[in-house]
Amino acid sequence: TAFITGLIVTGCRISELCGLTENDCFFEGNAPYVVFRDTKNRSDREVPVTQEWVGMLRRYLKIRPPVQREEVFISQNGM
Image: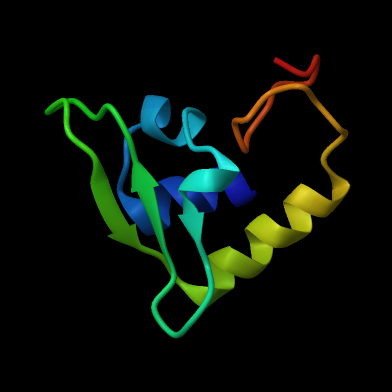
């Protein structure tokens, strides 16, 4: 549900959310946001996100199996 909610909250493309890394997430302070890199316009884009989604994403990251990838969202086989 964190993935689907992320699409709704950010209005991003599936490929943009799939490319999101933990280094692109800025959740501290009152105005959390994420940075999507290499967007359709070939530029970076900062997008504000809700505290609710930040909580969902943090819970997801706690239960996600350890992987060798930087991306936040992984497939069932770790890709």
